[in-house]
Amino acid sequence: MKIAVIDIGTNTVLLLIAKITNGVIETLAYEQRTPRLGKNIDAEGVIGKPAFTRVLEVLKEYKKLIEEHNPDKIVAFGTSVLREVANKEEFLAFIKNEIGFDIEILTSDEEAYWSYRGAVSGIRENGNIVVIDIGGGSTEISQGSLTEVKCTNSINVGAVRITERFFKNNPPTQAEINLASEFIKTAIEKLGECKFTDEKLIGVAGTPTTLASIDLGLKDFDVTKISGHRMSFERIQEIFKKLCKMKSEEIRELSNATEGRADIITAGTLILIEFMKYGNFKEIIVSERGVRYGVAIREWEKNNS
Image (cartoon, rainbow, N blue to C red; front, side, top):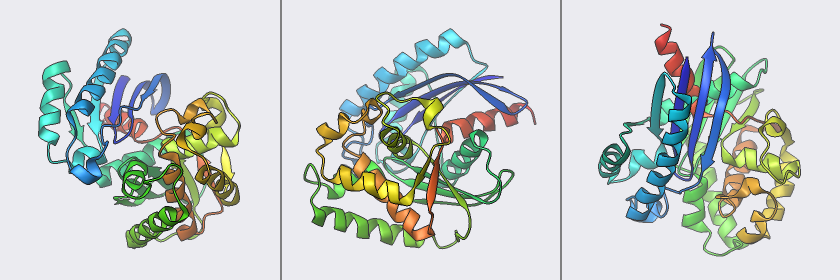
């Protein structure tokens, strides 16, 4: 079965075209753009009209690529930004009218669940696993094993949200970082039902993959090198200290992997650090597979049930 999945997030719009055979995913095409649909939503509560247009242009580009691959199924979904904005129905109608895509909005639990399923589809680790998916507007936490998802949770803490709310300077001041840190800690402490002991931590989405690219000194994003890459808590702290002293323009020079997220990677890294402290995680394993891979699996399972 050939499936096209479009993931419309707060910062990025991702495309996955995959062939799934007996539950095994083969990636045929993968694209990433950063139109930042959720720009200023933390303060304004609505998607701005320029963001409508930015996302539409990305979707037009993706539609051409999808048509070239002629998949059996096309799924487009939205996450945090579309769960909370006041004008989501207007946006959904605009996209439907302009390009014909019906956009499904995942609940926070669905996003966490399918992020987990996507992450573990690409990395084979024995024992208990925790997956963290740091998005632009929210962070999803899920816990389980290779065969079972036991706990899912979501907090309204994301890289775009933290940057816009707390980081008024470029680079942020220590006072701004401290305020953001306390806000993130308070949110993480509400996870409650998820208890962490000896799990392995897998990170998906832009923050861990960008950190891996920086850690490996990659000029360009290379999925074959970042997939399965391990970073210690100490190494992540080292990179964070470096990022805190750099303007976003300087961060952009570190790697092309920072494109579209150079101004939010510091906040994303702070979220990761605070979560690793909370769960006492010593290292993170990076996966390029996230919720879009999970949704592809969902569609394959529906087709084969």
